[in-house]
Length: 574
Image (tube, rainbow, N blue to C red; front, top):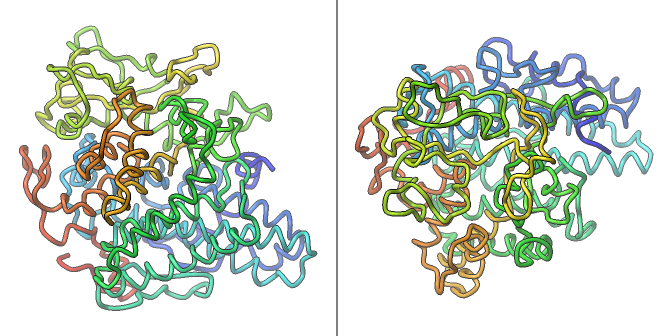
């Protein structure tokens, strides 16, 4: 089954599952799905499941059915899953910023987010739209299981597992960013308001965490018993995504639970699941690690080949968000958005003019557009291994950057779009080029430049799993040699010398270099105790040299209208 075929042709379900549910404000909890009814399922169970499951995936890949925004009243491009996560996890950090002149977005780059911020409403709504769509699919399919043939029942049960995994992915970011969020699974009936599990912030966050983790553990246990070598088709999720989410949950468990009783157990569980993934995916690739030979193969036109179910034996991209150019699909169809690979390339780049004292062109990235919307912050840039002038580096991960050698300024004199070119390096990693095993551009294999790029987004990569395993080992006094070997796979692929014995400082720097702009940075800084105090970066808390955040900034506020309408207790300090 080709996922894109169903993504593109379905077009019937998401409009009813999400858009009708979003009328009014942007919040969404399970509501009447309108057109998609039990009768629709009864008429053609297999067709229903294939079409509507595709639409569930669609909510993670683009705006909504037929390109319409599911989040009403919020910019369509910004309302996508990937861009919502970039806003929440990257824009307020030391890595990147969002510099167009907009009052609400502008606050994000300084980390100052009031509860009535429209971007908070939009990003929160995206997560809960996805959760609701998963729940509605599960409810309908579970209610009709008894009517299915054995073959269709097996497909239904697998699709339900996938919907549970996708739901857990949305809940991971909801718990991480918003804390004591309402919890809804398939047992919350349509029209009911999903409840907070406690009015106490710490207890409520912990209870939601435990429910989601328990569900993921159940899914992983099923696969281990019944399908231990599970390899879903390209674009679908399965065992590796479920287990990768558990790695992310357990690595951050002490933040999410605020409970000392867990001790080091979370690191042991994190390592157990991480090494299970590593053992399944290692063998091919760089030094047999399962990593792609070239770092930018994960972020180029051909990155879909390196996703699970892709054309290459190397499957570094564990959770992949598919995109496909219309001109390259034989059916004349495509799966496009202003998110994912398009956003991660075009938002950084632009054409310099003859009057500019810096040099850059969108043709260098094989793109048909450039937005000039993002710049890097110097504290992050300086983590890399540079020459004395911070112009060139042996680190292959900065291959497509624009630095002082190109006339760009390192420092952020401002976070204003009018200063683009003079207020930060361009730290782009996604391009529309075909990247070969030497991490070089293959122009013959590359497509024509277009506005929207057919470049997938790598939500979770195997390199993150290696680094998470290494961190779990170092934090629990495990084998430093094993941790060092995991870190060295990542370092050596990037062209750096291997470490003799890794420290937590080494791990933190390597994680920043390897995973930059991949929606992990805010979470990492919080886990390491570097988010609120003790480490400042350019324009943190709206001060050019940076200033500490208040203690309540460890989570975002719940949207004020959502909290008021549903009777939710607002997060402390907001």
